[in-house]
Image (tube, rainbow, N blue to C red):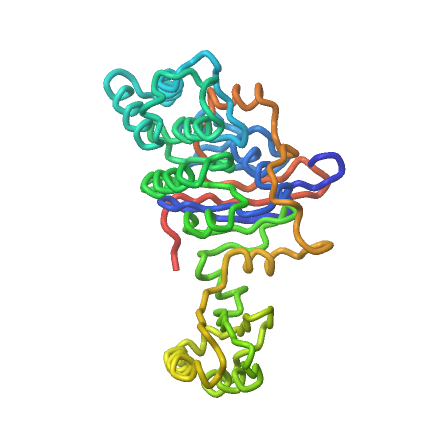
Length: 357
């Protein structure tokens, strides 16, 4: 809780080994607060959490044995090099000797910092610091990895490289990643949990959420000045009676085509292609429901769009506190707890293993 605001409220979520679970939400949704609870920065007032049988109240040292963390804000030592950072955190996670050096070289190559191996962290760019923070989270074989907006500040090429790293690293790990990038959530998330106002609004695979909240497909037709939209609509409805005219913007006419009618798409497209001249159209194309559309339907909007998707530090913990925790933290899997606030409760079940059913 921040002031009188409930940060996380009545939330339940499951995560599985070998998967990346994405917390998707605008800034202020409660993502960082949730991760702070999970990693021990904010103690629960009631309830408990278990990590591989270790209770966070009775055996916190056991809980901290295999957790890797990439915090929202980079916490690095200015006078240590990239190599020294990775060596330091690898040792904290139990790697020594030749194994440690192998881990360091493998990690630095994965995150794309080979040329910066001997560079001081203070000389790195913002994107390179994020890469190093991701490497610190992954090094040492951390079984549970918590990544708070790991690609923030990276250029497009670096983001995609990091996506590949995380996709390859998820095997044998439970990964929790927060983001407000729709494309990132769609690409990385084996399961996506949409969060708003401290509540998980929905959770599932990208396909499940798109079917649950999406209208289906969008057919966009580019028309000429002589196009009769009524005639065009009749042609579309002759193949797909449940199609809906969505909008007419300048030269573009958009229709919503339900998933259930996908078998009829080929015949519709064939007629549109054959009748271009008669219908007065130049081209057409389709697109599936996007994660942005899912998000906007899942999250009740107050006053229009949600808060700006700009980075804020309203949920950040002090750098010194995060750094101190980084030196000792490590894993988590099953959790039932309560936010330290009046009646604001949340429950997590981070179960290692595969989903059943």
